[in-house]
Length: 530
Image (cartoon, rainbow, N blue to C red):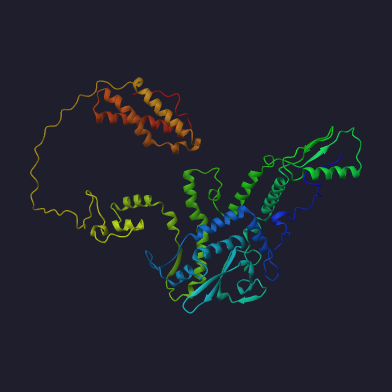
């Protein structure tokens, strides 16, 4: 029985290494990623994986962009409770303007991309008459020679020239290296086998689409059919391949008794999509990035996305930022004239302080007074200040709020007699208490309508999150508004009707919340009592 593959003749099964396609040139991993001279052996492979593997590119670029977006600030520690911002410190200026062709953002972004790919990065110090320039050296072109501490660095230029660099003329960012103290172990080396699997999967899908989305299979002939010679098999295979391989929209007409039997699994059977998600999850875990930050949103909600955002800058980027700050302080700060009690910080507070509305509400509550002048508010909108109005440079208080030192506050003379007493008016006659309370039959339609709205709202929320999603304040207010007319009809005045309606609404919704917390059915088998 001849065996035919629609894309061509069957190929013999070989070793899984090397993969084909974008990673075809990768050699088998060595015991150590470095040669005996300290030269990295796998740097070209790391670049290739970063170039061809979307999961690695997504995570590394995410880290680089978010860290480059943070500003680097210098401070002087005056005391344990006070510090001074050094906006014009020379180290801040060096990083802000590293060289005529590179911005601060690009310098930090390329640094983090090198750290994500190689787990090492290098800046060359260019000593100018009045400043210090910084130039990124490609990590794949730099070799550190030494043992516990680098004795010398060698930069192999693209033309093959090897330039020797003294350690004091370079800023080296290195991670841990289990094989050599002066060479880092890239996270991509740990992910190598996973990336091989992903590359093989991508090669298969590319071959599938190149073959006009046809599955591999075999042509079966009847048992009673005469045996073909080798020449007949080869001729039939060539005709089939020439007619149908990589040609979409063709219909095969088989001879009597022949049948096509697929031998390949479909994308759903082989769990192609879940495997792609797993690859991204493993890469994100290797770089300690929260999954929702790289587009994995299966278990994301509005509340936990906000918490994941805080986790990103506290637990994910926090160690990276501390690492960069300490390395820059160690290797660049000694080059400055002003070093006394100076330290660096990335402006991570800018990312964690919340929206402008949230800041305004919290500061107003904390201070108990307005905190901005009119011109400060215009500056936030990039509007020019108003010079002709002196009140625009003053903090304006509301009429019922003033500061003891406020010059605009009204002055009170204790010797001045007060206004004459007002003539007391007789109190309005009180209404008689209602003779009855609304019955359960009268209140039942409004209560059932409120339960229906609550049930429809909570049906959109997972069962374990329904207690937290139950807005008691809102439901108390809505139900009390619905019940108040019944108490007014029963003879209550407006104040008494509102109080009684709110008390009943709060009691009903408290029982609803209790049932949600206990996991019980909150809307059935309940009775309505006034």
